[in-house]
Length: 412
Image (cartoon, rainbow, N blue to C red; front, side, top):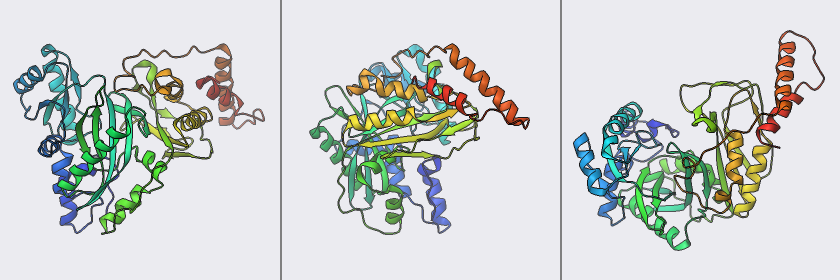
């Protein structure tokens, strides 16, 4: 068997077929279900046939003229999206016909590079909107919903903070989302893990967006609430095992994506070598990372360093635990979004649950001033590093200036 992770091959139907030809069990949905739901065009058609609301827009936009016509029909602003994959790749907002050609060409190039598939579609831009997704498991006949995750805080259509339960929907809306997600999965014979994504309008009307026919990056949020190991469930289902019998989410979980990027300068990705790294050890905290001290962060793929997930009996406890974890983390040597994440968790809009897909990019974020004691600590740390490299003993606590730098970055 092969588990494809959550990279691009995890939702590539031809790869699934290649596994079958090689007599290898693909731990994920069938190629047929992937085509029916993993393709944005196909999944929208399926959703409409089942009476599930979809975002108004076009399904045939392979030509620029078709895209312009579709946008004028539903009204600007619109989103151009890659039909063959997700993750924010090949997605552009367009506010007028004058912007269409540049956005259309750029989205097509990015979609082709990411998915080897340059097909596009156009959708009405819903504003203000929440992005809420439902985690499902299916066995090919029956499907269950394991809860929802709010993923509205995004930059460049990439998620930054995810949490569950969503603070912005009521129980009636939640149950309607669950029912729609299960209906889609069962109608297409979906087996294994998947995520059904929705936009929620200001009146709590909801619109189907897409199905990610794979495990999501943010799946630990659901695992923290339910106690399930979703990867184990995937493996068991792929080998004919049953769906979980009872799933009872409890408490609240929040995940922060720890990126090597500069949120104060356009979220520019960063690269370099980590000079010091210390993760906190705390109850009800989970850190998923493949990065250790002295690791190099390369510019070749994704700037994600780690996922930090905190659980609490309620949202406020989870928020405080995650904030404490960020404050107790030391990662030095390159620019990260560590302080920015702390700012988000402390913001009025987050504490009140007023989080929308445009919240982050509609604000100007200002980097903190660097006080003189931090400059001095940096000079001392570099000097000590040179002494160690030269074989000299140096001061007894050679990490103290690094800790000073780490404390400044979190404002503590």
